[in-house]
Structure formats: structure tokens, C-alpha cells
Amino acid sequence: MTESSSAFPIVILTGAGISKESGLSTFRDADGIWATVRIEDVATPEAFAADPDRVHAFYNARRRGLTDSTIKPNAAHEALARLEREWPGDVLVVTQNIDDLHERAGNRNLIHMHGELLKARCTRCKNIAFWDMDMSVNTGCPSCGQKGGMRPHVVWFGEMPFMMETIYETLEKCGLFLSIGTSGNVYPAAGFVQAVRGAGTAQTVEINLEPSEGATLFDDGVYGPATEMVPQVVDQILRYTA
Ligand code: APR
Image 1 (cartoon, rainbow, N blue to C red):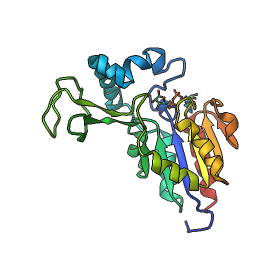
Image 2: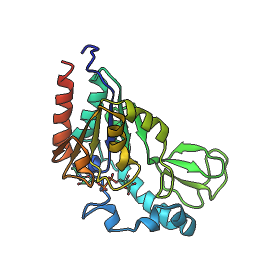
Image 3: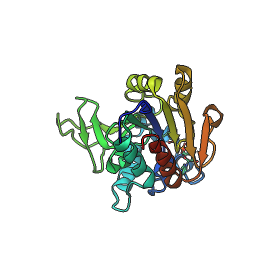
Image 4: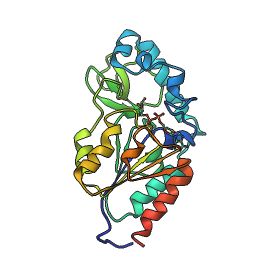
């Protein structure tokens, strides 16, 4: 592998579809999470204020699901880790997913714009800690010791996603933007492709089971299961450097 002028920065946006074949549910598919529970009951600051037990129960169940020993990164996560290792330029993965499958696969340049299921935040002292247990209104903060202020370190509807400034700066200078396994329903992530197009010359490619809401905004679409399509696309990209 050699440094070359082809080593433009690459930004990859991922959504729930990339983790589906690892055994984690998507949100808006027929068997998705929002088919069984309402967003406004479990994924807003208002829901947490009104019924914290219900919100904790929802995230406790998802956390237990994620820490189940059968849940592992799949071939799509592994291909993106390979891309970060082998591409001579910068590779940034921006994920909407709160699972930890990208880091388990080996990606290090990674932004969890919607937060992380395996972290907890104290709303009193703002401490953020690794968290793989159940949480309740009686859970004490490991830093300040106060009870009643612990919440999942995730971004709810109505809250600002993390690291937006860094994400937009990187989008504006990338040479390739890949969007993988996301329905394109939730902003600001759904608007990233327009930010890339507005900035200039990057190629934009969507990889999804089927064309997403914003499919026509992309230069190219590659449709099929992420575990098959992502390794193929990564192979093609890495051929540029061979
Ligand atoms: N391979 C590729 N794509 C897949 C696969 C698969 N095996 N299975 C499903 N998909 C696609 C679906 O066709 C769908 O377009 O993944 C997409 C998942 O879309 P959503 O369920 O809407 O998930 P996502 O786009 O990540 O949701 C965005 O919404 O509720 C919030 O905070 C939550 O981060 C999430 C955000």
C-alpha cells in the first residue's frame, strides 16, 4: 500500500441496517423497534421526565440484547475496519447506531452521533461512564454518588446529536461519501448527502437493502444485504491503491 493522490478522505454514515445481520433490530422495517413501541414513549426527554422507569426498561432490554454473547460484528463491520486500516487516506465512520459493533470490528476513527448504549451519563455532575448493567431511577452515579440523575448516554429525539461541527467539517472535504443501512428518515444524518454534494466533488454512494427515502440524491446505489455489498464495495475502493 502506498500513499497516492487517490487517497482522498472517506466518510461513511451507518445506520441500523448494518447491524441487522448481527441480530440487532432496525427501527422502521416491518419487524423494527418502532413497530412495537412508540418513539414518544421511550426516546424523548419528555418521555424520560414523565416515566423514567419505562425509558430505563426499554434501554435495559436493548443493553442486555447487545451484551448477549451471540451478538458480534458481521462482515460489513469488518470490511469497514479493513478500509480504515488499509486506505492510505483518512476514513471516518459516523454511526447513528448506539451499539459497539464498529469498535469491536476494529474501527477507531468513529463518531457515535446518537450516543452509546454502553455508556451512562449523570445529569447532575455530567460524568460519563462505561455501563453494561441495568439502570434505574435508584442507580447512583459512580462519580458524584447522587441518585436519580443517571440516564443512558444516547441522543433522544429533540436533542442535538454529538460532534456535529466535526462531522460537517469532514463531510465538506471528503472525496467519497458512503451511506450504509439507513432509511434516511432522521435528520441531521439524512441531510449529510446534501452537505457533501453542496461542498463540491465527492462521489456519493448509498448501500442499503432497498433504495432509501433519499436514494435519488446519491450518485450511485448498491442494493442488497450489507454483509454482501459492503465487502464488495470496500474491495473496489481498495483496488484504487493496489
Ligand atoms: N443490509 C442493508 N440494509 C439493511 C439491512 C441489511 N441486512 N436490513 C435492513 N436494512 C435497511 C432497511 O431497508 C432500512 O432502509 O436499513 C435501513 C434501516 O433504517 P431504520 O430502521 O430507519 O434505521 P436508521 O436509519 O439507522 O434510523 C435512524 O432513527 O429512531 C432512530 O435513533 C434511531 O439512529 C436511529 C435513527
